[in-house]
Image 1: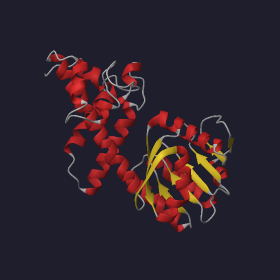
Image 2: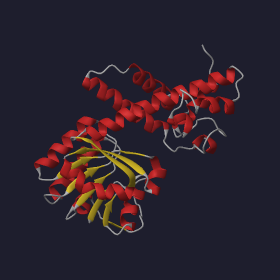
Image 3: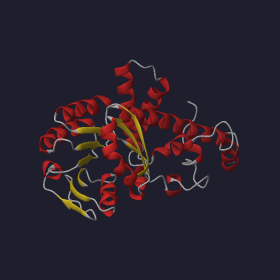
Length: 290
């Protein structure tokens, strides 16, 4: 396929490189000066999208997605797929999908899980929303960039799945960090804590696969001085999206709301900016009940 790829940052760059490595013709564009193996760079988004069978975007937020969509949709060929892999608000995803459909395109909202390592290794999970035909056109590319793609439903369903997933992730990480901090203060060895919880009813991805305690469980950012695998400010972004969606849908999400407030405090008023989201553990270690 001829693929346009707009947004060649920490996630988009490796994803585009994997597509080029698989033999696709990839023309990319990014506002920053980048060089990606196998990717031909265009001088604007519309140029990258012109003549493409599929255009993929990986962008920071819904406002930028809407602006990019306004630029590239007129340049795209009817029948092409517009696959947005950004994590944005559901309303923006659906608005862009409506414009793309009206232009005769096949829109897919397909946010990802797996972080920078997953993007580089081609092991991402895609949560996709859109028509059956649109998903079918994008699916072979998901197989190259990731290990799994789930068609979640109509346009916006991919973003809804990502937001719900990451609300669980944020809440669970806070609970895991709180539990380790409490275990410390109760004199419980961290390894013993892990051995019990990881094999009993407290089992979770944040405990078993991404443990926030250094030297415990599989290798994770906690073993690298909490350098980000998934940055705290990105978790805050996703939690805010979850609460924006909850407000729009009139859903009661008190734990999601509490997690959003805690990450907001951690990132904006404490020292969480630029750290992994599991750095909540040293935060709790320093704090007392009061």
